[in-house]
Image (cartoon, rainbow, N blue to C red; front, side, top):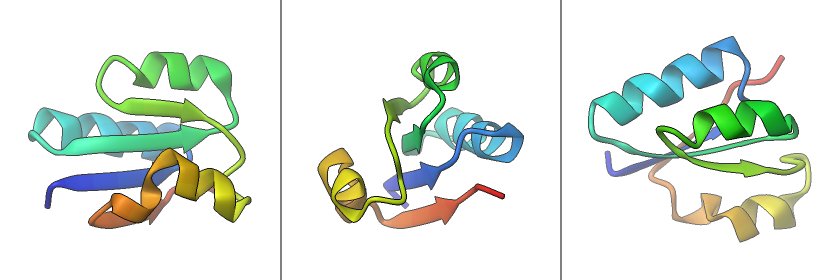
Length: 73
């Protein structure tokens, strides 16, 4: 697995992103919450945006991910 996209930066999304990053996986994470994205930028490519909009995901690069995880309630 080379690149994982994560939608949602709550407890699960952030923990998963950090764990994958520590394992050497390139991580792309997106959420509406700016403070969460600032925290995630320490270990992932973090983007603030509305993941319910297909064009936002495409522009963010989710179409180039090997795996995508939806980590929202």
